[in-house]
Length: 331
Image (tube, rainbow, N blue to C red; front, side, top):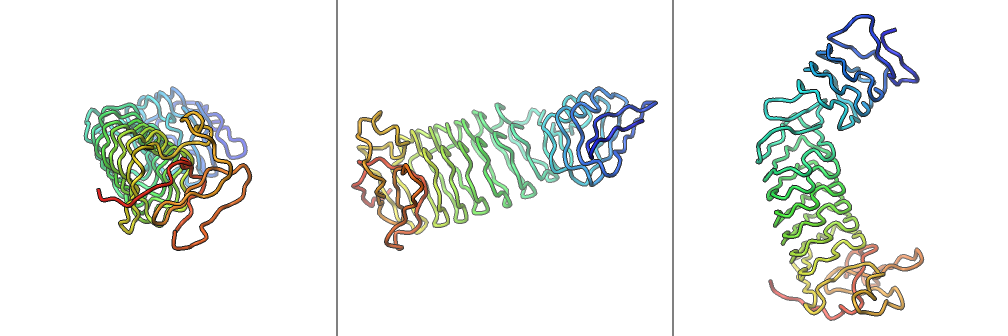
């Protein structure tokens, strides 16, 4: 039997004779790991629309594989086609079914091909790229795709991107200014953490959530623009942002943090560490403009502003108890 299929999963491939052009049977929903590993005779493989996932190392070391025909597989493991040099294009990109799996090029200024709809996790992580242009065809970028790129100084977000995934640009220490488009709904956990020379962040209207530690360790961050659309900011979002002095509302209102206490946001267990008593109650702390901050309560009680003119309540944000005297300032 050429194919062994169990409950929609292709678990074994054992042809009587070598086959160059493999056609996966219709009805297969998943390719198990290592099924085609080392099949050097395979030149092309065709997937039916029923295939939903290709697991790790499924086609590893298929050194003659040059063509993958598919209408689009929703889930492909980043190493499904590991060591398949025939799938790498002239610019060093390995793209399968619209998914950018790997980059082997030498260019430092990257322009993602227009055929790409998804960039898988860690594709450029720990590389020496200096800039990247991402086409609007890209709708999803996996976690850590550009993390720890020390020379990455310029990024262009695609118009249809909905989520900036966890650690997407963490530890990119050459980034100095970023503008996050309004198409983005969520900025993920540690998305820009460790970008130590990032000075200015512009978040456009449309972004709704900023997850914990998103800008943790951005020591040089001095101003951030937060639009009215943001309703939730996670704990420790601005932890160790020791130079953060301004929060700019979308209406242009500037809030200046007291320079005596520049570390504006941190977890409740850091109060004593920083030389202050812990708050005795979860009373909200108000900044001029439309933001309300509070320490986390031990229970699940929600706190909302009594005056709607203060604007949106930012859930689970922590603010140092002693930073209460805030003033409008000009930058």
